[in-house]
Length: 321
Ligand SMILES: [Zn+2]
Image 1 (cartoon, rainbow, N blue to C red):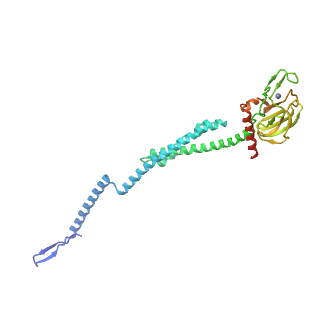
Image 2 (cartoon, helix red, strand yellow; image 1 turned 90 degrees about the vertical axis):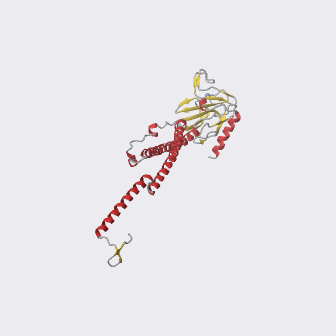
Image 3 (cartoon, rainbow, N blue to C red; image 1 turned 180 degrees about the horizontal axis):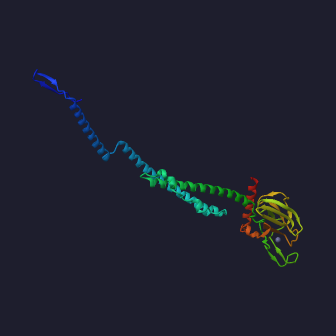
């Protein structure tokens, strides 16, 4: 409110208020308004250029904080990427080859990023490049993790299957050989009893009469009795997966047809029944009807004590299953 102004009226010696005409009042007001507006504009321009508004200051600070967060996130992403790479490497170079599974092709593991259209929403910012790069890396890790998860699932399934298969395959020696190894798989010019030339399709183990004979893998007894073809008292076990084992010339049999056995179960005693020139076990492995060399199916470097320890471990384990 402008101060009131007075003047001395010499006609009656009274102080009277100066009254401006309306025109002057309006002009004064306009002048005041224009000057104020000009000062405000100058102030705003200066403040904006040199100091920034408080809101802008807060936003700038937030942007700085976000940049720091982004840097930390990038470190986390790199760590996750490294860990995933090491899992992928173990999967392809160790687990899958051991389980006889094909490695996963790179085109499935790392299918690429495709178009960049889906990053449209990130376009047009100062940090667009950074944000798109981060998003691509995160999506890449997410896709690869999904593939790795599925791969480990199939590896686990195969491991369980393999473990079961390992229990069934004939994988130990049927006797603790304490005497000597007899004929293996070979063509015999002269059969020790018959005198005629014949193929020998198994491995003979010369053992003292009455030596315990063990099932070499889990399976079902499909023959138990006298074999008129020369094996005398004989046991045949079907292990599944195409495998059958035959134990011949036994002095007595301790299993019956249809019985399920586990690896290390005692199935009978060695002897010299059938066409045999002395106490020994005839042990034969057939895979889908083809004769295999039994010596390729176990490690016979075990000492007598180690062998019995193994048998005890196998049979005691089977009692609790
Ligand atoms: Zn034989």
